[in-house]
Image (cartoon, rainbow, N blue to C red; front, side, top):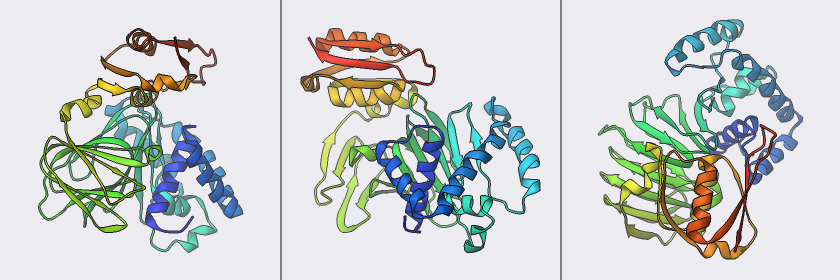
Length: 343
């Protein structure tokens, strides 16, 4: 991997997902490529995997006591090290916090430490499938992260531009700072704002970015195209493809439907079955196998709140006239599997 900032952050995200066994096939391929480039990379990954056990001993079981847990971790680890880089593992909240590849190298590798003169520390917050979380950034902006999402931001986040990198789906409530623009980089696109509320859906496997603006004004641009630019208005949904940076699909929607997930519910209104299955797969952390491609021709309307995945897929079976077979795996580490076919 090239030693640039964006790819370093992606590498940090891949390592985080590797440690939680949630990496996609594409992410695993990229990480394997990096591991095979140099023997030091493999040694470094093994070192990270070993050292994370130190932080697991001081995991945060109560979010209100996280400062106490962190102080205990500092006393155990940081006093024995001359570096200030920190890797913190928080299982209870299902969030993986990573200080960026440069910081990891500086913290863990004595031989490689000499090659890093001024590491830029990045914090990556990761939510596993089946989990959601709320993060308060250093500028008091609030971000809600949906399942399987990673958000990264630099240690000097507030010094110049307020820039974050997103892989997944998040709802942003950005604090207004006139002289400090806030930008979200996702799937090759950039969403720039001053102060507003909006939802960004940019999972890497989608090959597109979808932005829904609830209030304020945002500008959507492409990182590799100076001519691509669109200024959104409240109530608009913008979809841009990674393969075509010249066109953008604009529609008027109920913004609350697209951000309802942060309130603990999913709202579907005549939604294509492919979208429904993808959201439920992450929401419940289950595997879904489609036996008959005609299943994708179905549409579904409904609201998911506190129902179990068994109840929801039973409802989908009735509403869409499909068979949903639920296979229970008694291995606690394995995900439940749902097999869907046409009747």
